Image (cartoon, rainbow, N blue to C red; front, side, top):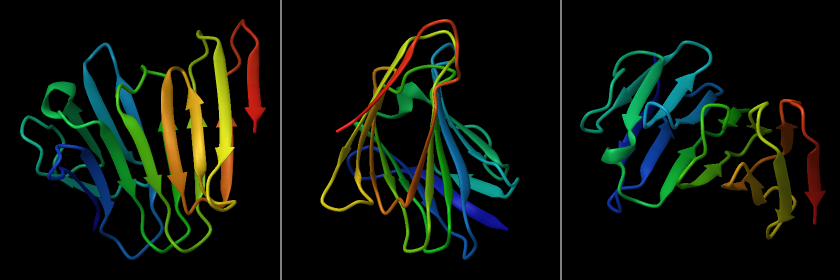
Length: 165
């Protein structure tokens, strides 16, 4: 069953769009050492991609080279079910603004950082209690339609700071 598609929009932003009727469980990562973005369906469902140079079409993991994305955003659009969406920076910092668009049901966003970097996390509410912005590991995540947020800073040797404003 096809769960999501990975492609580029007219502005060359990287876009992950849900294509299933069921709940999504998607993770996005930026792998700095391999210079690629990684989209994983944590349930093992099938992802498709139309991005030139991308690997993993027809599998549960799609890898997109940084060089193929000239836009400024990494957009994740989930469906109307209760979705679990994870932005994971344990492999590196996102050099794009990450935009998470939850659906109509109870959606959860997990923001995960690495264990070897000091973190600063800031959440600012948007127009309603289900939208806002989170900054971490020099990355920024804007979100909307999210009912629950989990911050996983990974511990590590330094102090972790969470500021909610």
